[in-house]
Image (cartoon, rainbow, N blue to C red; front, side, top):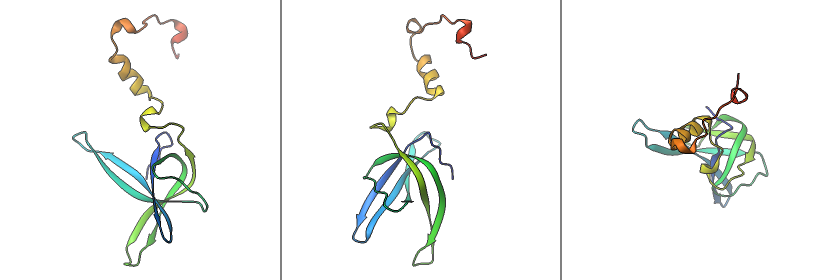
Length: 123
C-alpha cells in the first residue's frame, strides 16, 4: 500500500446506532485518462472524531484486516497519526515542480523573465 504524505485523503463519515465508521476516498487513473473512485475503511485511534469529507494528510498508518461474520477477510487502514489539511479544496495544495514547469510552458513568452544569472542555477 502506498500512502504519500504530500497528497490529502478525503475522509467520509457514517454514523450508526452503535458508533461511527470512516472510509478513505481512493481514486485511480484509467488508461483513457478518466478516474475510478473507490473507498476503503479507515480506523483511527480511540477518541478521534472527524467530520464528513474532512481532508487529512496521513503521516503514519498501516494496512490490517478483520474477519467478518461470513468468514471473509476485510482489509482496512489503521491510521495512527494524521494532520488536518490546511486548505479548503484539494486543488489548492502547493504545486509540484512538474506543474510549475507545465504552467510556464503554457505561459506566453512575454510574461516569462528569461534573465537568468549564475546565482539562479542550482549547481
